[in-house]
Length: 277
Image (tube, rainbow, N blue to C red; front, side):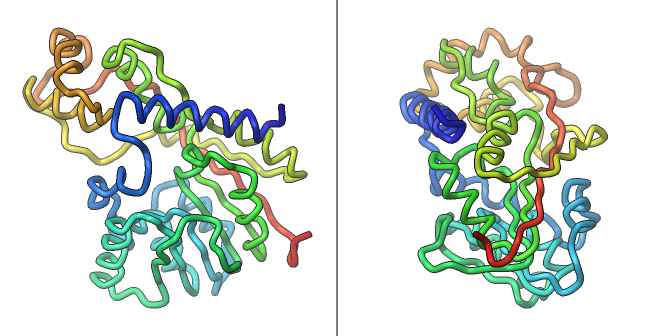
């Protein structure tokens, strides 16, 4: 079995389990989270984004694959020439356009599509962040990124994929082990089989974090859990987890989750030849 086959099998196993126990993954899954992905494009970018900026050149044209509300792509656009955000979620595209309008950013457009597109496009830099875990046919996805990039591909990821950070919560909530999403350990062998040898940078000074409102009581804590794992049967999950709230959260002025696996930011990147083979 090839590395790509192993990768794809992991994604399908995760999808099957998710569809059986919770809200299935897909563009609509992310719609309710879209507003939380709209960050200030003019903020000091997070370290992984700064590392991509360090590898940019002036007047770079950028494609972001699955760019959501522009959390990553818009700070890059402010250092480059243009941005095309290929994003299948309508709610994410709406938040992207709102950010573009609010900050008066030009030459930044959202393209309603999955990746790869039907018609080939190209740019100096092709980037994706936190998307590869959900791709069930990974080699064409990566090949299309490589072929579209006139100079560089950048993949922003984590040492523990975000879908896997809640593995213990998932086990407690559903009574079975979480089927893990593939991470860099599975992604790198796929790239190597494609004769791509990327640079890998682990950012040990920036643990996984996300702006979020912490619960302040047990009722809010259960809602927090529902938001994390999107169960199809909330009553069954509540029955399992309500007695465990004191173990699942450190309770102070706010509740802090105890189950999350620590994770570090990563940048996987390589230069391309143009035209590609």
